[in-house]
Length: 454
Ligand code: ATP
Ligand code: MG
Image (cartoon, rainbow, N blue to C red; front, side, top):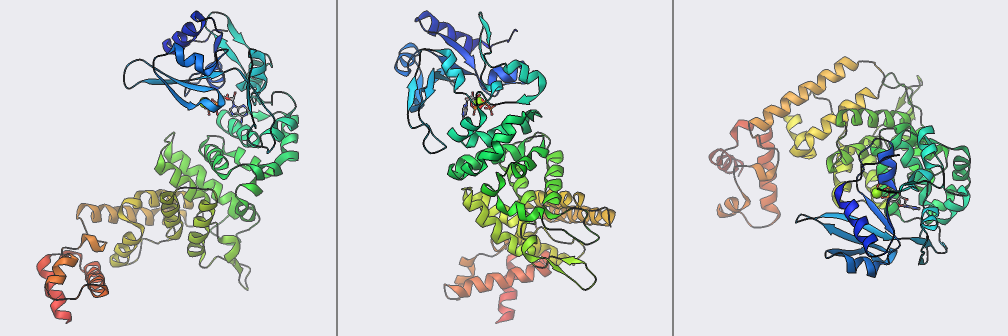
């Protein structure tokens, strides 16, 4: 088995060996190379203690020193960073999430044994070759995810491993070996002890991963209750109307699937916003469902209620304020028909925000693709119209917000209005006027309009 290890990790291994220690590349990079994937980063495991590592390399950072990890910086500025971690055993786990102590060991074998899955527990040395004590390579070739050791014990130690397991399957297209899967079902409730931040990070990795079918394993395995219990309700909510052919949960996943298709491999802040909005846009449908005399389901007010719920959910999962705000905005305004008067459209863009409209179109198109084929062509055509209107609005710098008006609060003050709510009310009135007459957004015209109203 030959792995092409890049120059810097080879040099780090060499230096550590020169100083009398053992060193290997380990974990994700070995797995990825054996699968023909490009590793995100190259991690090194060594018998040297953190203090010894720091003495060998001139540029280091103590990022994770309490876990035995020293970041070694190589080359010239901007440096390339490598995590060099001392062989370790994990001490007692008392709370299903963090080892209560870190104990170093001189044995590579012990270090590999503490790792979560067989495919993540291989080390490689440029001269000595692969160290694969748990048949990680066999599991890679079978496409199987399996715990190192007894799965139930491993999940008991750190419950996040259950989500990591599903995440690796979702990224790599693997199946979960049956005893690992069974253990997951038994231990699901210990996810309650894991911090929301760690849950959030794994959840996003699953949502971004190419094999979205694994998202439903969170439900089958009983983990969803501790992550996004609202999704369980969505799965139980039918949509008996001609626009739909799936329950709310499956529809939402179809929307996410379509968003992914459009995003391709893109991974950035905006793509995360879209994935979350796709997943949550109908989150309030379970609570707003009514069935009329003909047996047709309606979901009146679900975007408004959904905005509140999305905010609350994202807060619980410790998302940042910007994400909370932008995702809940997308949820709030996802239902709009681009066949209303242009003034209504301008007001709509004002509420959504000009810069968020491209995301909104993407969400709305995905929403349509996740629905039944009923009136699909008309629905798509309406979105196309919306896009054309939006382009016009951008090209013509049409004002949709107070700050885009040709007069400022200060100028109105100078006309003799009093500071305070009065100014705000004036600006709002002028914006209303400009929404109806976009070509009259000039200082002269607006000041005249103000005087006319007096
Ligand atoms: P990625 O490509 O997502 O970075 P990775 O395998 O490198 O995947 P990391 O979270 O970066 O995953 O962790 C590096 C290595 O540390 C893993 O390959 C695994 O061997 C070990 N590891 C990480 N988290 C755990 C955990 N919770 N329990 C046991 N071992 C773990
Ligand atoms: Mg990694």
